[in-house]
Image (cartoon, rainbow over all chains, first blue to last red; front, side, top):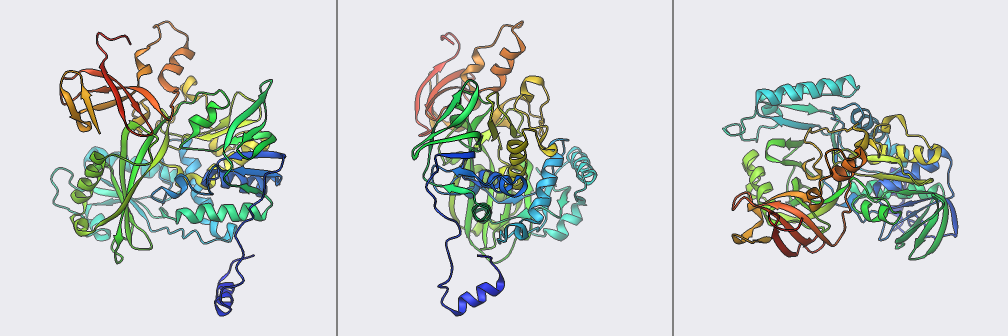
Length: 416
Length: 87
């Protein structure tokens, strides 16, 4: 069923009785051409682009819970392409272009809102670094505007401009940056993949990966064995456990990142604002809640909840930057489990086992990457070659020294 | 979360700096193969459950500590000093 404004109106006139489920609920078949482990944003996008770009439709996505039950529903919904390093820059640029055509492509409203993203800076050195980053973004073909203090004040008059510890010198505006409705991205990809014949199999946990003579032959699941010559592991947050079933040890440590949302308020924050020095970023959802977050809790964790010291730190940073939000009440907070790599960049690559592919290590930047990640992973699984925009996300780059350390913090997993 | 420092007693998590997996203690020999160094610096077992990792009592006695804890429940099982202990 194609969605449109006309259909919304006609369904409204007839009691909304004609809507159908957005995807089927098939039983797993005994064999597929390819299976994808993980029914989150990246896994569903991989399935969609395998079907759309490469004509592979005898494929299945295996999800241990329900579709979109992982980090695709636990993030702060920010979409941006403001990366600096070659390797990251072209990848996120490609992703943002896919975002811009996503709703028409999927026939699904993902509420992509390019409201502009502003990174604040607070010293001469930081201004130089952001000017350089802005130039790199322009060279990549994306957009960036270096704002001085008055330029920021014009857009964000409610910030505290009298702060002496972190005086606002200006900001780097990325006009095409913004937000999207996170769950809708999963649902949109799921529906579009299902329409192209992909089997989306829920409540189906993979319990083993079958390997014969260095080749993958299928997977064992809680709903029976499934044969497949190609298997994609797309389970960020749990990548280590999935890879361990194939005997692989990954350059990943899992950490918890917290996020928060307040009660719904009238429109007050029009942009996405990032206050890096305070480890704080914020935007306002279409429902009115202020959505904000900070840094990792810093210790390895699989608990989808955080600790109080980081809650306090994030609140303090928010009050430092914009005292006006002090009266808003926090509605809830939650934690997501991040695959943290030693250089802060992801992995989309083959593994040493033939037919087994890995899409992992998204650190805390996975949401904006969903379209390009699925696009590149599908290309890799279909052709056996890395897509050019993801060519530098190799699994062996840590061994060869070709790191993509965007923040320049060295090989400690939790510092990225 | 509180860690019981063997020297200072139970202290708030904020007094400690987290460094990473206790595997950092098993440093390869200086002339070990590059693969051994890659594995040491980058790769992790990363289990959901009991782990051993290194914490530094930055705002206390400044000792390095080997902590056994559960990554799913955040329960702290043991805290031992690295110095003098079997690494």
